[in-house]
Image 1 (cartoon, one colour):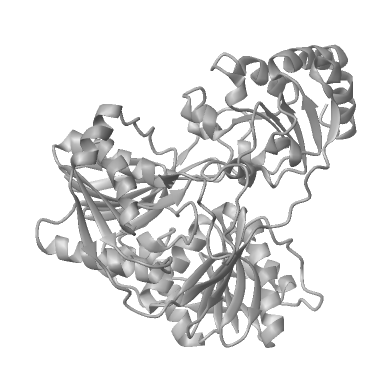
Image 2 (cartoon, rainbow over the protein chains, first blue to last red; image 1 turned 120 degrees about the vertical axis):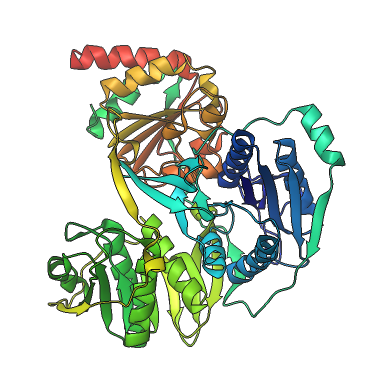
Length: 256
Length: 324
């Protein structure tokens, strides 16, 4: 089976998020980059399915030239091919992102195609919750989102997907080709070895230039860090000597 | 008119739906509009009894002979057909799995923009809105345009309040025109969880551990504390990545969101992604060696010390007091 998994390059934020002066982005001067956690599981799943079925796993992202770094991480995780839909300039709205990805897949579907498309349920940064669904709708493929368990049945040409709900899970069965939007916890992404990283650095990442199709219906105006009431913690003590004070608070909050 | 997507369990609206209705009412007040609701399943009348108090004037109860369980694309198509029929200025959904999934289908089918997890709206020709990014650690001011505005209300952020002038909601049946392809994705079965103990998301007290726990065995004393307090046990992403705990225990942006009365994070530094998962906690009591740790800044109570020394003594004290 041939699987395509999409990923997004996002900054590796720490304990505090600092914005750029124009409030348009996170100040990444001192930050590294990674891929969104849901998508890391998506890549791992694609690679596992490719390994089990003797097929291929392709990693795709939409971003600037620098996003090749995360595609190479996917290659180091044993994805076979990497694709960058290369745009320049500021962040795109989800409608334009989905259209560019769907257009590319449509072209590929006319050739060899994919059996399964894997998206992260939502990106770690923008969190728009819609790109996978929009791509599936444009390609007229079935999709299910919020998936934490996935099983492909190649012979039957189906995929079984589970979504966690309170007290259990909902099971969905989709005919292939299909689209799934997955969540972290789906699997344990492998650690890419130094050797794999070195090899991935030499692999070619196909670069396809893309343009916006239409005006953004959802436009970012500016970002803001929410105000927090910080530094108000009551210090109960240091080390085990704090235990009587802890007990007092437990009693006050009626958790004992 | 503002159309709100209602999620319910046997006719009782989910909390996130009541929040979305409260959010919708704020938008409706600004534009002097009515609020109506779309409900799937046979419980339309029961839902109408509940949502009238939130200012809903009419409930559109969607039914179709082939629609007997959750089917995201068919639901999205049905909402889209209701938009054709009713021409609402906006469709508002709760920021839940289903809310986002159904709304995204409607958005794609109608080629409309959609804004997820909104907190505030200033309604005009376009909507000037505030929405969550990074699970709520960052806010985005955005402009949403389009003939019909599609947006979801951020869950657990808006306090659900009935309307001052609430009343009765009328029930109107709606049968969508569905094709076979609309029904290709639907729930085929439901599996009950065999997990024991208190679910993390619902626990009243939560004890959790992070990198500072140091090993899988290090969690033994935290498990003991959780047992003594009838608490659920959680962990940070760092502890999951180390392989010490399963992802089911993870609290944070890509794990479980908790809202206990008391949260006791031990050896957790408090990265923003973790704080997103526990911001629903009423009280945080952090145990950490580093007085400068971010989690101390965000806690109500703090113990500066090594969890490996503090927790065993605490367990002993609780045992003495409660006779467990």
